[in-house]
Image (tube, rainbow over all chains, first blue to last red; front, side, top):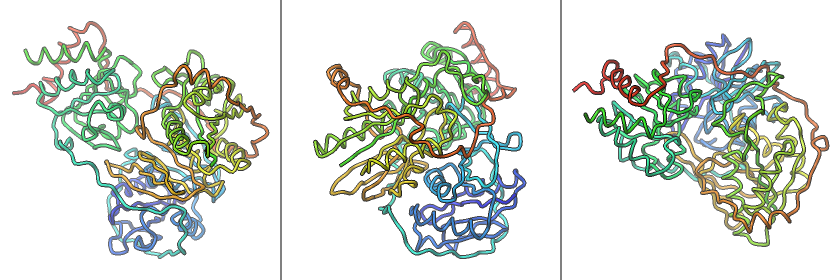
Length: 302
Length: 259
């Protein structure tokens, strides 16, 4: 089996997540080649063939052009799998490539199952298995496959295509300035949708304070405007690994889990015993957060 | 200007799921269905554009599924869509995203829409394929995961959500398709007068067989609950007792409470 791995670069730098693609191919036991729109002066540590288009010409977000370049690499390499990360780059580009190749796509693979792939469903509560026949386009879940170490130098095969663009990239908007750096926090207490309303965030913040930790939040809580974005934990917020993570009323969407599953000790409080957060929690307390959390805070305060 | 927004009806994700007898999808028994959350943002954005353009625009909402999806079409009409299309399909869950996108593209091709809105992904299947696949089939400009949208002088300006808080700004001419991320706007609740008005709006029904020309490319082999990983402790019972146990665990196993 042969896999063409679609690497990513952003703001001129290779994204470390590219090495998760290499890890995926190794776990699968597949031969691989890599495709990258990147800087020829900063090559990935990868001992294999690298189809490289110069980012100075091809841009970082030119999906129609990148699609054409990938189709060129597929024609030369003839892979069984074309593998993207399930990222803002990958989920945007993979379906376009699949349509042009006339093949199916499997989104957000989390593992291998019975000769095929395992995927999440229902926001991580269920699983789906698919079998593969012929060529397939795949996106893999960020963080699901351990990154391979960066080692070796690639044999570069340059690719070039005439410009084609239905979209014009007008630049990046930097993240909003952070009032806190969750990545450095040793204790994080996070509020999820289960807290019910904005006023109840205070209850979670009080526990964070009693423990000398920081307040975190899941995406729905931030989208609803209950907590500032700088507190958001997850793939679109901050990735954290505190010694203690307390998830209050957080069901455990994949994007949230990816941002905190490396925490040292995970305590989850949720009234749903089946909530996916329970899969990675060291302790799941099945309770109403608004009853349990204030009682725990009171106990800590003595 | 012709606008289309595509919506899916999904179960409440707080529900408990179990496989159906086919073993390929979840059983619908005891599930309450509602609009896919991402699509709620797509409808709101499409309605806002419809309001901005006034009578120069017509906004159609489309859903593929069994008769129950009429409920979400009615909601979208009450939010401000002008007309609805129900692609009647008793078993959309047995079709892969490629087929669903092909069905929508087949309908859209006959209508020559200028701008199409979809949700970024569905909450139950979560493939994130439908939008970009429709765009590719129609040859439209496309960008995904919008957290900002504006339209002026024939140009869409979209703000995409990237990783780690970074955003990217993209400009596109029509025809185009965008997929909408959570938090793009604040979706409105339909008001009672608008719910009444929606009852008079056109609802076209199209049998899926009229639009389906493609075979499944990726079939689901099995659908199941995740294996429970050992190790995680589950505590239940009286709150005071729970607090005492958790306090002891935190003291023993974590650096908290060790001053």
